[in-house]
Length: 397
Image (cartoon, rainbow, N blue to C red; front, side, top):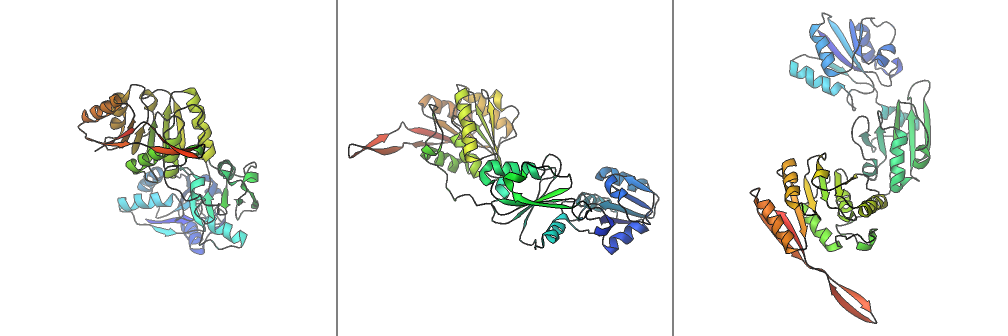
C-alpha cells in the first residue's frame, strides 16, 4: 500500500502543495475529517471515509485492499496536527508512509499581516491547558491556535482580567477562505466579540512581570483579621519546598492566601490548590487571587483532609493549619504522592510533636527549623524592636 499523509492548509485546494494535490488525486481511498473531505479538489475519488481518530484510521488501513491511500489533515502536518500521532502508530505497526506538509495557520496569518513569524511564540490552546498570562509575558508576540472551550475571546478575557486589557492583538478568522477576516484591537475589546470556530489569535508582547524573590511584603496582601504567614516565613517555606515552575502545589489551611499566592507566582506553569474552612478567610483568598491575577490558584472551602479528596497528586505541600487533623492530613498527602515535598508550619510545641510523629509513622525523618522574626517600629523618635512568637518549619527528610 502507498500511504500519504497530506496537510491541506486551510482546507481548500488553494492551500495544497502540488505534491499534496497529486497524492489526493492518485488515492483510491481518502480519509479525513468531514470538512476536509468536502473541500477536496476536483478529480479525487468518491471513496472517502470521514474519520479523524488515530485508532479508527489504523483499523481501516488494516482492512482496506486499496493500493493508494491518502489521509487528509488541516493546516500543516508538523504544527499541532493529528498527523504526529498517526505517524507514531504507523511506525510502530511497520507501515511505511509519506508525509506531504501543508501551509499552517501561523504562516497564513503572518502572510495576511505582511509580517515574518520567526520570532513569534507558538502555543496551542486547542484541547489542552493553556495559561495566556504566563506565555504572553515572554517578550515575544504570541500566536494561539484556538478551538474547543478556548477561543480568541476567552483568551483575551483572561488576559484582560490579568491586567493586560490595553495590549494589542489580532484575530485571524477563516484564513485563506473567501470569508477571511482580520480584526486588530485591544485585548479588552476583542474579549467582548464573537469569532468563527476557525480562528487564531496573535497577542503582541505583554509587559513582563516585575522580577521578584519569594517573600512579598505583608502589606501587599489584603488580610482583615485573618492570621497571615509573615513575609520572612513565606520566603523560607518556598525555599524549603523548592518550588518549580510546573509544580502541582497544595496549601492546606490557607488563611489569607498569602502562601497560596506566593506558590502560584513561583509556579506560573503549575497549579495551586488551597484549602480553607473559614468564610472570611476564603473571601480574602479570592480577593488576593484577583489582586495578584494568579489564575492558577484554585480554592476549596472546607475542612482538610476531606477538602483534599478530589485534588491532583501534589509535587509539594505546605500545611499552615490543620484544625487538629494534622496526622490525617499528612496521611492524605503521602497517600496522594509518597514522594511529595512537605513543609509544615507550627507555633505550638504540641503541633511540632504531632508533625514529627505523623512523619515518623510513615518511616520519614523530619528537619526542624525555628524562625523568630524581629522588626523595628518607630515610636516617638525611637525604634522599638518587636519580636513575634517563633515558628517551627518541619520538612520531611
